[in-house]
Image (cartoon, rainbow, N blue to C red):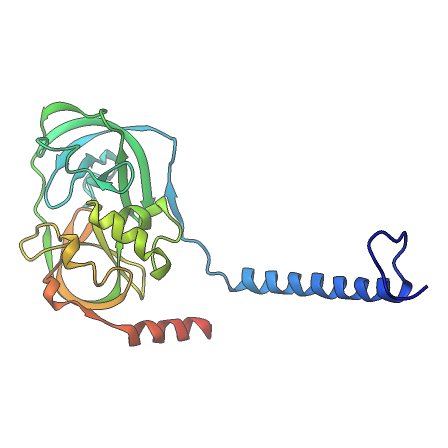
Length: 260
């Protein structure tokens, strides 16, 4: 039989069949090798959590400035310097919670929502219509000023970074982060060296508007600011005019990690 073969013939010529088998084996082995390389080269996903579909109940005091936050008591830690926990509040989708908590600043409330958390950073996606005011709450504390600090890292949207998206940072996430930040999601600054999270605030401790950050979202930047601390939350008070890109720093970090 000739090596010429058409599909309606009952049997493939021996030489052609042998060639097809060899090519198939080689391609299969190559595919396995490529898959192994991709898996071993993949950075592990962050230990972040979004309790999607799990509605939990919370009670605490709303703090509206600079970003909507629920401050709750932690009885088990009384006397250890961390008597209260702080949860950033956001609305479903790519929206902040300013409208949801309007008029509730300083009020004790009961609400329902889905918990989001990562490396000590915590957030609640509030279920619309679930907030009940319980009257005036206790006074919230002022932040402790820990002095000036210079950091290199990345501006991310807190909702995705803390758990809704994984990974929730880097250029692949830039468009999503921009939409979230423009919708009122609080901005976080993440240190490239150690992953520390800092809530960005303006010179007077006020919220930082998206328009002043949009050129720097998901880009390596170096900034200097005043480090503040409120219970379990670190805040970085900055002048947005001082922000500078730091591409050389990112290239160095990526090179170092590839050699490990």
